[in-house]
Image (tube, rainbow, N blue to C red; front, side, top):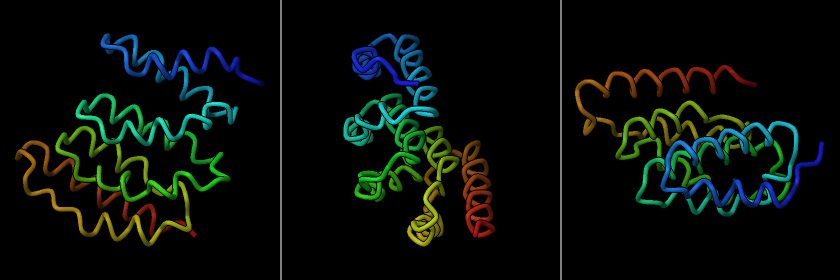
Amino acid sequence: MRENLMEIVELVKGLFDKNNKQAYACLQELEAASGHSREVYRHVDVFAEMLDSDNSYIRTRGMVLIYANAQWDEDYKIDEVIDKFLRHITDVKPIMARQCIKRLGHKPYLKSDITEALNKAYISFYADSMRPLVGKDIRDATAKINSEK
């Protein structure tokens, strides 16, 4: 199924909407479209830029869409920003860190880079309530990646 390109452009713009419910709705539509069409992948550069936003919601949306479009990455654009993506393993916002960690490992040939980033992750600055959760996510992601062939 080919997505309407203008609709996708509007949805990408909507990711920056000040109304977080509206922006989240755009994210959901783009994530769903990414599962069956490479049309959303055309905007992966925008998603990579979103990782640098001061707004954690925007960073999360960019990260989710990078992950959702990794299957279409024949141009290796995601590989070029993998270090930027991996920095969010220890994002200042623990929720963002947890979302990032849960979305690692989609590209097997980056396994060593991802494992190294997980092993070096410094999480002591997180609040006592979040540190164990982030730590468990890191252990689970490491085990999953190490079990993949």
